[in-house]
Image 1 (tube, rainbow, N blue to C red):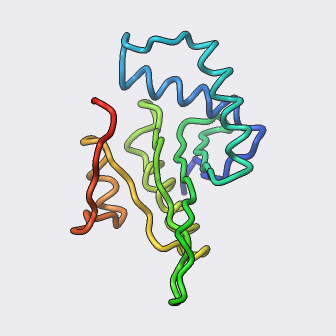
Image 2 (cartoon, rainbow, N blue to C red):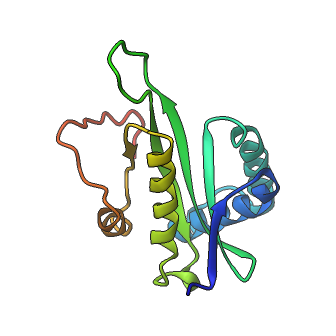
Length: 157
């Protein structure tokens, strides 16, 4: 039995989600984060409150009632078609589990919830641009590289 819970995040979770986003980016960027924590968390919390009532869905992982991971999905509408097909796909992003909670199955549990939602709501596809570190987990959870996907980065990396 797992000692963690994965659930859909609600608007009241925005402060915790914003704090986790800060932790995620600081872990990724180290001292290269140009914005202060308080300012970032406040702005991110406001962003979340406006997006979570629209196309953004968020799942939150908790251990002992304490937030320790999340994954975001942006629902993207496709142009209507006269042929029967799903008219929405999901862009998976901002997938994070705190370092002390990794290797316990939380990441898989978060992605399983996203996949379950996609099946239940008949999404066409889930897409993700994984990091080198996260790609093996995505692949174990059924994500695979399509032959037809092309990308054109617009901003310099």
